[in-house]
Length: 167
Ligand code: GNR
Ligand code: NI
Image (cartoon, rainbow, N blue to C red; front, side, top):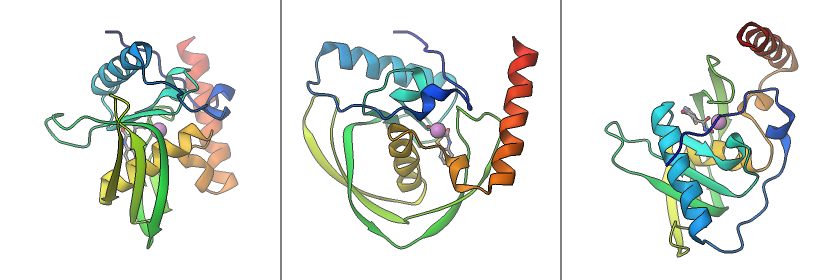
């Protein structure tokens, strides 16, 4: 197991599109384990492989309070979306920034689990939001993209300043 380094906005590598996993083998299993450890340690409720500089379509999520409900989605596809809701979001790649984003309030998603077995899940509330947030990462999209250009510019400046201070 290993804790992986999380890329921060505006790192251009967060803008890559992740490629599908063609075989859920031991290497993917290792990545999933490392991603869970990284997410729990952060701590966060979700993590996409692209955030740890692995451009593959792999997501881990655990929204439970006691970190007892690990969920893994490989090659996830949203097959249905219903309604709209606004929720305050944050992102491990944009630390310290929280803002409201509008997304579908219920989705159906198909994916492979960590054993490569297909499954379908319906999700709403925080889980639904988190799945949509993570799938966006796989397509090079960040929650700040839903904010105004003015807000995004301010966030970018703040992140670049933070980066300079910590280098
Ligand atoms: O830890 C996280 N919290 C969160 C809160 C509201 C909406 C989405 C998220 S995901 C985020 C972890 C992360 O950046 N995943 O990509
Ligand atoms: Ni994120």
